[in-house]
Image 1: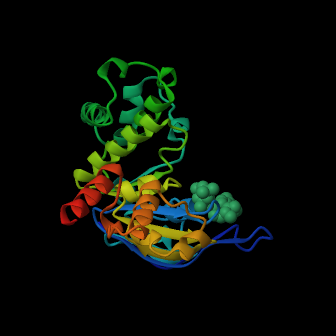
Image 2 (image 1 turned 60 degrees about the vertical axis):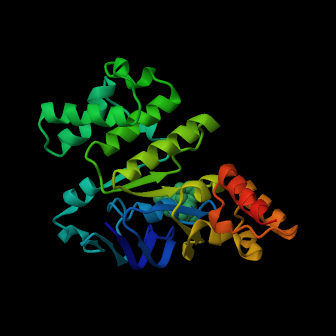
Length: 286
Ligand SMILES: Nc1ncnc2c1ncn2[C@@H]1O[C@H](COP(=O)(O)OP(=O)(O)OP(=O)(O)O)[C@@H](O)[C@H]1O
Ligand SMILES: [Mg+2]
């Protein structure tokens, strides 16, 4: 399900003294089954951008086309908004704040029930989603508020994936997690992607961008600066310096090795293991 933005503008509090232009003439295609990372300085418009995809925010002008469902400023005429929201799951930053039901199972089955699925089927879907996110059955009847931070976040994500959205949007899903929690969360998203879901993830973590991203979108001051493969971001030192993007350590190491006579292709370096593989390849030719 490609997501296509065309000449999209978004202005907060339009026609008031507080008017603020948060997105400016965005033209962008997010590919089907990609793991697209959205990066950019704080306030660059990342959250504003993704909220247009499920019509939580409505474009001031221009359109978003989600697999043929077009959202534009005439959204009142948009009959298939329910269908759109069924196909696009959005997980906010700190989604655990959205938990509200008495038990974990009730919380996760709320979504499907809200979309008209009967109780039995909704419970079935909820159990399936909880299983996928790695929440043990012994926790199903607990209050979500008794869980750990990481578990709460998993439950909240389960609530969004019950209806098996074609596009899953994650707004800084690893923020505040410890390194292991963050790694496990990324593994979970990879698993969801393997089931055919397009993942769109906002992050400030460049290690995750090169490790998991198939594409990266860079925003600055509401404008689309670049869409490319993650490693391409780091080919030109000046351009990523000016965007205040951190260079991942493995990329730094590969560049340093290249300055010392190696010929490592940055394209193949996504983590320590792949860097080691690249080094071994060169050794064979010595
Ligand atoms: N409700 C609002 N009313 C007015 N301006 C807003 C509103 N929400 C966001 N903005 C402004 O729009 C711009 C983009 O905000 P947005 O939340 O999309 O940024 P972001 O890239 O997600 O930032 P962060 O990395 O801090 O989450 C910011 O300058 C912000 O101050
Ligand atoms: Mg944000």
